[in-house]
Image (cartoon, rainbow, N blue to C red; front, side, top):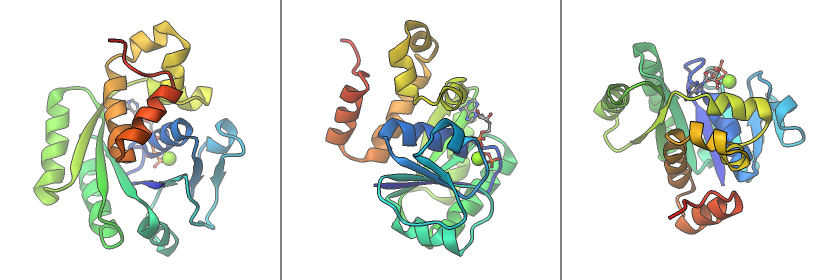
Length: 203
Ligand SMILES: Nc1ncnc2c1ncn2[C@@H]1O[C@H](COP(=O)(O)OP(=O)(O)OP(=O)(O)O)[C@@H](O)[C@H]1O
Ligand SMILES: [Mg+2]
């Protein structure tokens, strides 16, 4: 499958989420925007303006939407829009969806860097006031995404490595898994992924 992560809001978490998903799924990672991905994900990540449609790829799209981007968006299975609970980020998320919904119909908004239940409710309300059919999933404020990028490991890989990391991430991981499940849109693929990452819950 192909996954796009996009919002015209800078710093909302596109690169952090894109890397986490790409590394988790063992997908390529392609971005039109400068970042550290080529350093931390060698041979799998590429920064380029010459965007091509490639299967098993996460696209991290920064900046404004141009023809090269919309061409890719058309072929993606899902477009993920990260959004923080501030007015600017929500406005830009809505603008991004309005623009990209000409090219794709399956969106997921990740309400990210949440510090409270209220943060989540506010992001969800803003998005669904305009797009009632779009799923909004929560992702709390966490160090896990920053650590993932810095260590070049996915969140599930990190928690499998150490009990301490697993403990620190115990609230983040269920939210993150719900996102993976929604994105993959196939229970079997999702269960296989958890098995592969030794991330099955202990009963
Ligand atoms: N859920 C989260 N909790 C805490 N910090 C986060 C979260 N998501 C992202 N961050 C942090 O926010 C910062 C900005 O994230 P990131 O660089 O991924 O945004 P971006 O949308 O790619 O920005 P740009 O538009 O500049 O490319 C990073 O330091 C990242 O680690
Ligand atoms: Mg970025």
